Amino acid sequence: MNAVDEAKANGELVWHKSTYSSGEGGECVEVAVAGGAVHVRDSKRTVEVGPVLRVGPAAWSALLEVM
Image: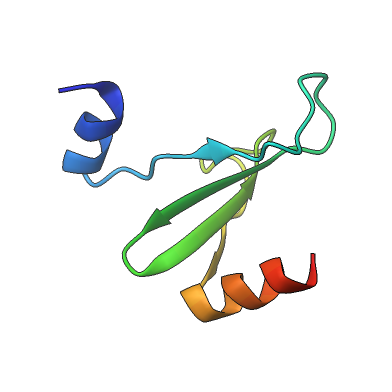
């Protein structure tokens, strides 16, 4: 079992950094999909120290359409 499968099995969110985020720091967004919702956070402010925005799939799709 790899780390991603293990995290999912333990009920943890598996975060993915946006491909638009630079490797230089700055504006980085991470997304995790679980429990019928899309979770979004600032990669500099992880769950332990920062907020997580949780939206439904329809709202997430609508956001992506306008981007």
